[in-house]
Amino acid sequence: MNPQAKLIFSTSLLLGTTITISSNHWIMAWAGLEINTLAILPLISKSHHPRAVEASTKYFLVQATASTLLLFSSIMNAWYTGQWDITQLTHPLSCMLLTTAISMKLGLVPFHFWFPEVLQGSSLMTSLLLATVMKFPPTILLFLTSPSLNPALLCPMAIASAALGGWMGLNQTQIRKIMAFSSISHLGWMTIILIYNPKLTLMTFYLYSLTTAAIFFTLDATNTLKLSTMMAAWSKIPTLTATLMLALLSLAGLPPLTGFLPKWLIIQELTKQELTATATIIALLSLLGLFFYLRLAYCATITLPPNPANHMKQWHTHKSINTLTSTLIMLSIMLLPMSPTILTIP
Image 1: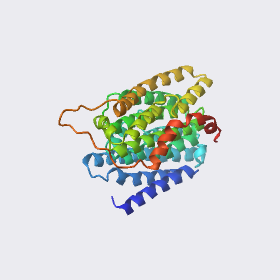
Image 2: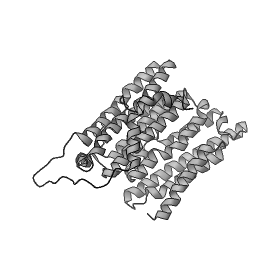
Image 3: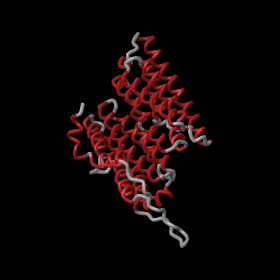
Image 4: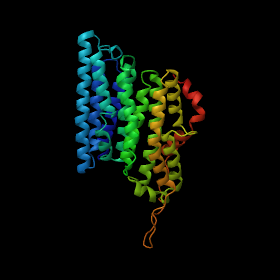
């Protein structure tokens, strides 16, 4: 892609995100989401491969439908209450429509079908944007409207997302699809605590984005797209592949890694709210995700590919590990001891 075009689209993404997260009027928030959608479409379809074009078409249709529902929800709320302020969403039907619209934008169950397919049709860096940056504005809208949302609707959706994200990821061989189902599963954790502690939802999103970014940058450096190529990637940059295993286990939520912090706090908060059964169910469902993270970690560092006589190992690349990737990996592994400091951040 032309560097000038890429700069325009990247700047538009930044602009759209900033408009949405800083606005308190529904029309401005909707406009920011639309700018985001239009800016990411060329980045998804830039390879001109049929799968990329299909992915961008699916993404456009789903996001356009979600934006329509969001606009309809805000107009209905303004009609009944006279309020355009995002925090003043009080009409029950508007709240339900907004939950549906944001769930479609995020890829929450049962509106998740588009997300794995779109990630599979995109490049690794575009997939990273779709899994993190593009989910930030809808998450902020959920955060702002959390007092008005219906827990009876959000709780089943969150548990279904955690279950389906773990279950569907078990038999995948394409890494982008595995990361898509991982994202759906993490969205379940973020949604289940949204009503009771919205700040915890944001912190979970930030730590998830950090760890996911570290994993995607590592996959991009080793040019790994599926499990079979991951098995041979260890010979390219052995140090990076070893740390990839730790980043994957952090995403799974194993102590003493960074990813354990949000899961620990969410289970603690649910128990405080006397939702012990919900906490138990979602903790058990995370074991499904743990299985495919362990499989990825096993393929990345422990499994060797078949070595017949005519097989040559891939040469070590002379690509140096850039500072951003190494910093992200360190943060995604070693933040747990700093948890008291993290918790004091407002």
